Length: 206
Image (cartoon, rainbow, N blue to C red):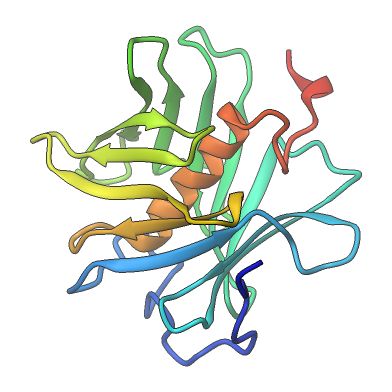
């Protein structure tokens, strides 16, 4: 199998200078390699590397946890976003994205779609600023998805990585889109569409 984790020491300023901020942008497309595996013992999650092989993000969820709330961390272990399932939703399955570890006011909601090739709608929450909304199309099971903005521009893509199967894939994020936010959306997609999900215990479904 191809080497997945070439450099485990976080590089200064890797990916985002301020990954805890929803509006952390890059000037060029950012390519991440996402590995559906936690590096911690007895944990499920993600380990994410940048184009240079440096650790960029982590998600670590202990096996005993339900997975209904997951924290996306940067390479140094600082919370970037918290992704939490919304209970008792009348609009279908929804996951809320909060900035950092603050869970009072979500900044985005990711709602599962049952229409055609659209997987999910990503919508900025009221009171979180005039953030753009997005649509995710494709197949998460095949690691082949495109995120479109309101003008139907492709702003991020999930692409399968050759040879290594569906547990390792690429994410390419275009300039003007927060890389941390894009990764938080991937976490929500994992919760909604992976069978079984790495992070979620399906016995917790209402």
